[in-house]
Image 1 (cartoon, one colour):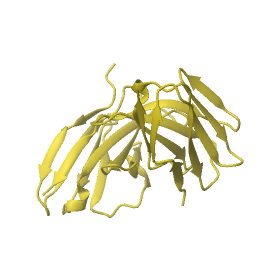
Image 2 (tube, chains in turn orange, brown; image 1 turned 45 degrees about the vertical axis):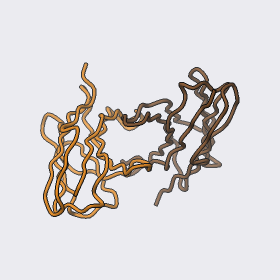
Image 3 (spheres, chains in turn blue, orange; image 1 turned 180 degrees about the vertical axis):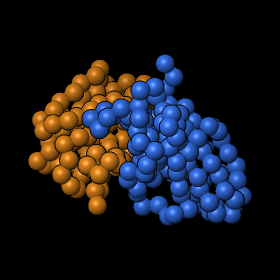
Image 4 (cartoon, chains in turn green, purple; image 1 turned 90 degrees about the vertical axis):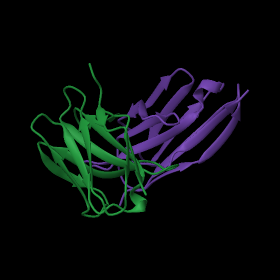
Length: 112
Length: 110
């Protein structure tokens, strides 16, 4: 049983560009959350998707957007990249509210 | 807004010693989680605490939750090198997101 899978694992982009990160949740999980983890810090909540809709959003600008597909997989899009967007982007899935999040291995984004 | 604070942020321990990591949070919640992260790796779930007074133990780690004090502890007993990692607590904010503390970077020295 595959866990949460994310692609790509690493990505280098230039300021002003746009990026799309992808996530497939663990089998049986219908809720996907995205987190940004800067070096040496805890994960910061970006948003959560459930039933193909954004259910909750953290304190991130509109440059950060997402999507969830009918098969529960999800994408995170970041427009107009800034240097400060360099971070590890983690996708997590869960089957219900009382379960812990299952994290993918993340996508390391470097913006130059 | 829910705030989650951990202390200490850095902890260097000798093997065989005991220590406790503290996690305080600012608003009512009865769901708290502990995660472990090894360098360059993702987060691994350690404990799920779902009610006041909950206590969970796994090996040399024991976690507890006091919802009245808005406090969780992660106690390390007789530390070994393999426990070296960063430990995060996370609190369910009841608005469908989970807020993480800044993490405690634990180093266990021989």
